[in-house]
Length: 289
Image: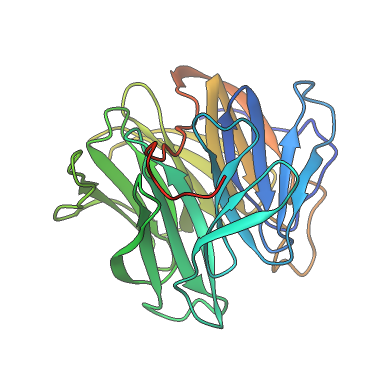
C-alpha cells in the first residue's frame, strides 16, 4: 500500500478515459465531449486539444507509418482521424442509443474496440476487431460495459473487463487470425468496477477500479500485488510511459465532485511497460489516408 496520490495538472475532465503513451506523446480523451487531448511533457502543464469531434470518442491508437493519424473508437463505429481533425469511417456497426467505449491496438497491429448502450443496458455491448485490411468484425456479444482491452506483451492473451459485472476475463488470441479462444476468469471485483487496464513487462495487469478510488496491480495468476489510492472516486484509465503509470479519472455522475475528481495522476512504479502499439494497415489495404 502506498500513500494517496495527488494530481499535478490543473485539468478536471468529465470522463477522462483512453490514456495512451504513443509516438512520444501522452494522449487521452474526454469521452462524451469527443475531445482527443495531449498532455505536455511538463507534468504541471494543462492538457491541450488535438481534435474535437461531434460524437463520443472512446479511445485511439496511432496508425503505423502515418504520423499524426489515429484509428479511433468513436460514435457508433471505427474511424480514422487525420491531423486536421477530418474523419474517414471504416464502419458504423452500432445503432442509435449505442456508443463506442474503450479500445486499443494489439502487438500484432490489429485494433480492438468495445461498444455499449448509453444506458448501460445489460448485454447490449460488443467487442470489435479491425484487421490489417481495414475490415471490421464483431467478435464478441453480450457484454454490458466493455473496458480494457489490454494485451500481454507477446500478444497471446487479451484481457477484457465487463465493468457492470465486476469481471475481467482473459482470452487466448490466435496470432495468425486474431481469433479469440475460450476465456477464463481473471479477476472479480466486488467493491467497484474494473475499468481501464494496462499490462506491464512482467505480465502483471494494472486495473483502474471505478468507484473505489484505487488502481490495482494483479499478477498473471490474478493475485493482488499492489494498491494505489487516489483522492478521486472514479479512476477510469491507465497506461505506462516506461516506469511512469498515468491514471485518468472522471467527474461524471457525481452529485458533489471533490477537488480531484476528474484529475490526471502519475506515479513511478517498479516495473515498466511498453508504449501503446499502433494499428498496422496492410500496404494494399483500402484504408483511406
